[in-house]
Image 1 (tube, each protein chain N blue to C red):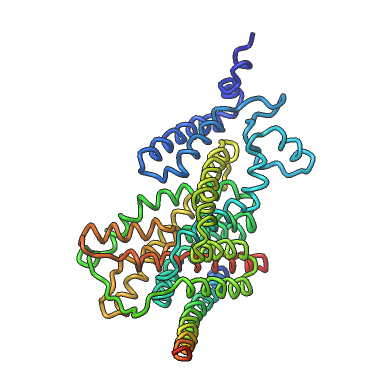
Image 2 (cartoon, each protein chain N blue to C red; image 1 turned 90 degrees about the horizontal axis):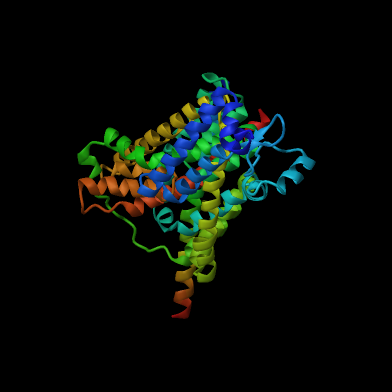
Length: 44
Length: 401
């Protein structure tokens, strides 16, 4: 039972980190596109 | 003249333990079969041809090293005492490769760098949540095998964790974790893992056909992405994610560095580096990996009592991961209001790019117009990332128990 809990704890941490990466991707894409749009409008 | 002493490959068969002799003969035969299946294309030829030859030579080419010891002049994986190691480095022709490139994971990291070069992270960035969800479901084997190994097979936590990592379906990851967590079963677990990974290619299509009815396999996927992901965005992604994951999981830093460096080099467009890694490093590392796995398959190393549980656990782990991946495919199918092909789920098992190709092949067999490869590659690349995360967690957590 203890080992199952350890495995589930590892899985839980894995899920959190994986979704953190997914959120990071979304935030990164938003920031890159936001600043690029800003730069483009300044140039125009 | 004693002919058995002249032809020692045969002569040693008469003095060894009968179980070892049967093992040697069987492994020689298996080596020949692997070469045949590799050359035929049934199994991965890049690994199987050198591996088969290695198995044949290591088991057939035994000789009397001294009065009481039988071995070969290829590699001795169990030597660890410094003086003996320095001596053996000057005798066995693959010993330098084993000690300086295989057992320290250099080969695994180079293979991982090559995987990074092959991976287009654009699909992950376009569908991060979908890809991550599938990849996490496809880690079912990595998680459930651990309690099965400790409770049903009585393995210690470190060996159970090393066996669980087989469920990531990622060869370099298995090498890496086995070397850190359970060096005593490193040889048997890596050989078994690579054998199974080759068999995945043959087995997973049947699992898909068993679990996904025909009408679902041919489904088209509705795309919603408005922007293409640029190389600049992929470069920024690779360096940011590498930094964050190295902060969180320093134990997996060599693998993370190798993978994301490969991704960054691909996106940088530096063709000399891309060619060097893709054409030279990756093939050289794969060749020596196959050869090394083959020569490590000698009967003395393989025929120990730990191998049978590992064989069963490896099978359980990969089967559970495949089932979990398909379950993930169904989950996304329902979340996306039935506008998703559940076959993509198998690609969450991160055997890049084999599982993505299997998903596309199985879908195309039902509906020739369906193109799911880009989604499958997204799940596949995410599988590599989740595998690295879980391996890093196992390597960090298990020694604390």
